[in-house]
Image 1 (tube, helix red, strand yellow):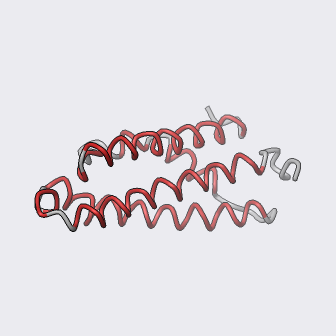
Image 2: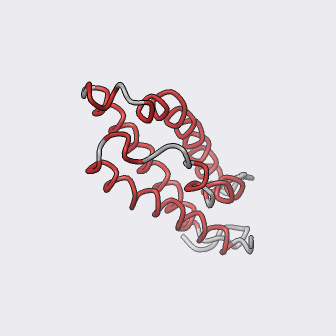
Length: 130
């Protein structure tokens, strides 16, 4: 596939988009599963993920997927803005504990969150963004 006109390897954009989609899908699944468990669904942490964090993550992921598709077609894209933003994902999720759906789900979400942040850093580094 080579290099995009911007000099950024398309594989980095694809990795970033896949990592975002995987993290959001895992959060969505965790919210759906926890909603069925009365011990979890009544907690403030669960309600925060369900009503605030997940909708925001879904909205941002939709933008990432759209911008990645544009980038991969060689069209102008703001994918780097999204990558810069996702470098701070862990900080953005302060106050939203990954344990909202139980410790097993948290163990599954942590590496997906890390993969997204790592992909964002790699994309920014390839673009020369400090």
